[in-house]
Length: 88
Image 1 (spheres, one colour):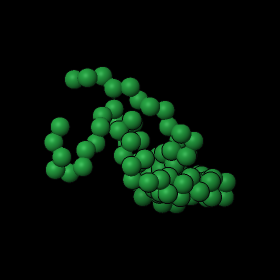
Image 2 (cartoon, one colour):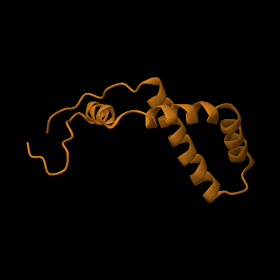
Image 3 (cartoon, rainbow, N blue to C red):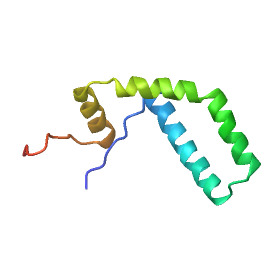
Image 4 (cartoon, helix red, strand yellow):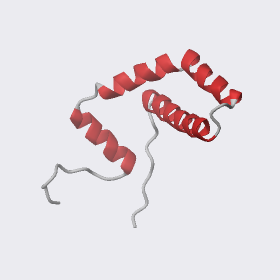
């Protein structure tokens, strides 16, 4: 299997990725311990401090044209994506 080199994330990709991981962790924590005040405090802090920046980064990423998204996915995944039905 060929070894892949991970491309670094740009600032918007990094911000959204970190937020997604944090929110998944907080969501899981809220499900398992719904009244844990520490979890609620962490969620409130994220919403007050970071949510606006993350939403702006997400909007920036969503505005990328499809060709740029495909190129970026290929860079991050270490391979080329081809349109459905196109053979190598």
